[in-house]
Image (cartoon, rainbow, N blue to C red):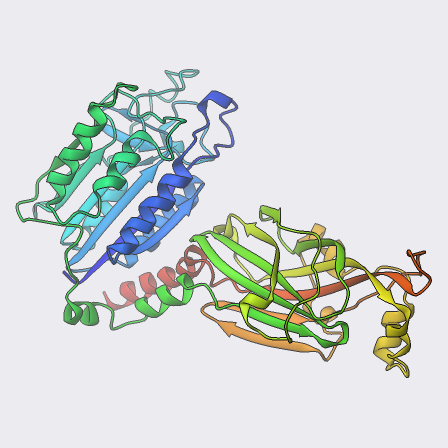
Length: 482
C-alpha cells in the first residue's frame, strides 16, 4: 500500500432549508472526530465543513489528485441526503428543499473519480438519510434525465460502501450523545486492527440494537483481500508515488504555523499569535498578551478586521491582563490568553487575505511613568498627544473588498515571518493615548491605548484554495503529455 488518503465532509448549516427541525446537530463534530481517528491511523485527511455544490466538487477533484496506484482512499460524508432510483445524493449547503437532483452531488460521481485513480481500495461511508425529507416539489424535474453516475463497482474488486441506514430510511441523531448515532458507534470500532467488513458488521449491529432509534445500517463490499484501516504504508512505494510536488503541496497547505510573538517595547507589551487548523477550511487564531508594565491592562477590547466577508467568530477569555510576574520572555507560560478568533469558509479565499488585529485597553499609569519618557521621540510624541483614536484604512476598505497594501506601509517597525503556508506580516501602524481621566488619586492617569497589528494570510492556505490552483496545473500537464 503506497499511501492512505481521506476526504471528510460535514455539512450542517443549510442556507435554504428554512426549517429549524431540518437543521442537523452533529455533522461538524462527526467530521472532526472521524478526522482525528483517521489521522491516528496515519491517513492524510482533507476535512471540510459546510460546502456548496461547487466547493464539494472542487474538494473531490483536489482529493482525487492525491490518489494514485496502490493508495487506500476513504470518503466520509455527514449531512443531509436521499436515495432515488438506486442513486444516493449528498446535499450541499446551498441546495434547496426541492427534488432537483442537479442541486446535489451523487455518491456515484465521487466513486467514479476515485476509481479512475487506480486505488487499491475505495471505502465510502455515507452518514446521511436515504429517504427524501423535503416533499414540497416531488415532481420537479421528472422530465429531465438523471446523471449517469449510479454506483458501479470496477472490475478490480476494491470497493466498500457503508451506509448509516438502509434504503428509504433515515439516519438519526441523539441530542444526549456527542455524535450522530452511526458515527458514535463507528468511532468505537474504527481504530481496531480487523478486517473492515468485520468492523462494519459490529457497528451495524450496535446501531441496530439502539433502543432509542429505528435505524439499520448496511454495507456492500466486493473486496477479496483482507483490507484493514490499520495497514502499514510501504515507504518505498510512497516515495515513488510522491516524487512530484504533491507531497510539498499537501504539507505546505495542511500544517498550521508555529506561534509567532511580536514585541511592542515602547508599551512594555508582547503579543503572541497561536494558530490551529480546526478543519481544512477553518482556522483558529488565539491571541495572548504579556504585560510587562507595573500596572494592569483593563477594559481590553480586541477585534480582527478583514478584507473579505469570511465568517468570523470570537470568544473572549478575559478583558483584564495583570502584570507579568516574571521577566519578559517568549515562553508561552508568561502570556495571558485573552481571546481567540475562528475564521470560517477559507475555501472561498482566492487571493491574499489581509487582517488587522486591533487592540484597545485602559491603564491607570502613575504620572511619574510619563515623566520618565521625556525627551520623547517624534513617534512617541505623536502617540502621546494624538487624542483621536486612529482608524485603520482596513476599517473602511473592508466594505469595498479591496485594499491598497502599499498605503499600510507607514512604519519601520515591521516583521515578516513565513511558516507552513501562512505568511504573517506584522506591523505597528499607529496608536493613540487619550486625554486624562480622574483616577482614585492624583498620581494616576487613565489612558486609553490602541494598537493595530497587520496579519497577511496567503491564498495557499487552506488546502482547497491551494489545490484548486495546483490540480489545474496538473491537469494541464497531464493533457499536454497525452
